[in-house]
Length: 450
Image (cartoon, rainbow, N blue to C red; front, top):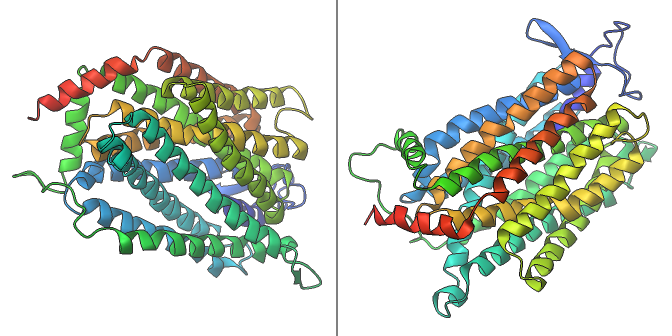
């Protein structure tokens, strides 16, 4: 969807140096679009749009995050978010013949799609620690919960990448079909077909979850005197008031604030750079995605084996993954000084997608497991919702900062030092977290509710 928005904006944009239309075949040349009362680079617009979506998610997660701990609200929130996610992934097909005049409509589709997608991620993630802690091997045999949290989290992340592989594989195959004297993968319609395929895949694989879920699976009733419109804000304020009792959890929150922003900003920056380097070739980007999907599966399984074989703690594994992810930002910094190195060539894009699959994909599994170890039992949705708030609160900062840097310097590469700084601070904070002490803090916190 970012590639589609970028493509349509370029079709409607103009080169500020010549005042002529943007050249789709020379996408590294300046291209601006009208934005409010001024005009800005397309790359800045893309970053600002994602910041808007993340800001809206911040308000939604703060309002309704903890509500999912009660009654059937988790199911209802997930179902609505999933349906909206499917809808707004499919809707771009209505712009298939657009000349770029309605790129702001695509912007609206993307914002609503990002909001529903982010909601799905947070509330599906909140289910995993509950599932892992209630496995028979944990409840009946008393096996170590940390081991099975890692297992469930990694297997779920691996399956998400299997889905990535399936959709990328299907789209790669159909790209070679003949179309109008050329290949389908070289036609603009191929971009739009991709979003419809992904929407269909999501409908097939996600909706059965709601049909097969046990009907009696629910949380406790809403507390007496509480209101569903305000309980989220009260719960978040309550959680922040308990910061001293859960000090290591809140240290991790600060670190998460930094590195989640860093990871999402890397993804957005590389997506923009890839779009420019490939002249918005959806076929080329699907091939990048195919490589990323394969290596992501390998990366998750490799780290699961690696941590099991060397008996590494979650914190140690997370630090390794964070360091390897931060190296991408260092790599991008070289692009400030060199024309053919620093994420500036197609060869580097191939290398990045392999690196991202092997070393960045596992970060979401391990950060989820780290969080599950630190949060008090019975407050999973509250704290996963809180971390969703933190994630979205931080995720708009990177795009805004990088967008402003790009707008000022006309070079997206000059934003890489900011991203590198985020990882350096985040890694330093995690080094100081005492996980065992954090678990004792969580136990003491829950005793106050007895």
